[in-house]
Image (tube, rainbow, N blue to C red; front, side, top):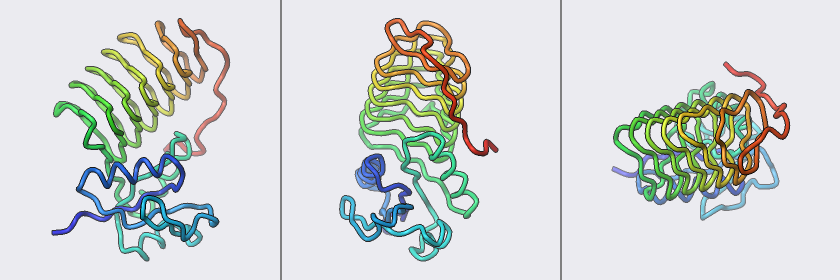
Length: 222
């Protein structure tokens, strides 16, 4: 039996990393890459052709005879939108786990989750739908990652941390134990977080302090 076919939605740099992770797993055959940018149509990324989305994702998937998709968008809100559109088109959002990542058998995982090279997910952690745990991020025991959040490369979540919906934890940031990063918030690169991060706030620095508000919101949250 051949490898399972999957489409990758997103032909940017993050898409390239997702394609590589799928190839490295040995489980998947990347049938094509989808992108709204018509200028990218016909090019190849890591030997995989980019196809137009002019007729919509359902039609593109039908043309390529593939019912599975990996959404390869770093922006939480755009990724959430594509995740919803994929579900509406009847596509299955697959989990992408690079073979060099360590994921405990005692981790609970939803759909459309991405865990990239060198990441560690320790036992007791729950990861909801459409979450991205990026390259070499460390997610220790008993964390809870709510839907559509993004843990950037080399970020460290210690024990008992909760990252709420659509929140970002920036590159190299460290979250102390048993803290909550609330919805829509943004933890800047290199931040040391020693207190809860409030709804829709931007924090950075050592120790992290509130520096502003994050105004962006998803178009539809259901």
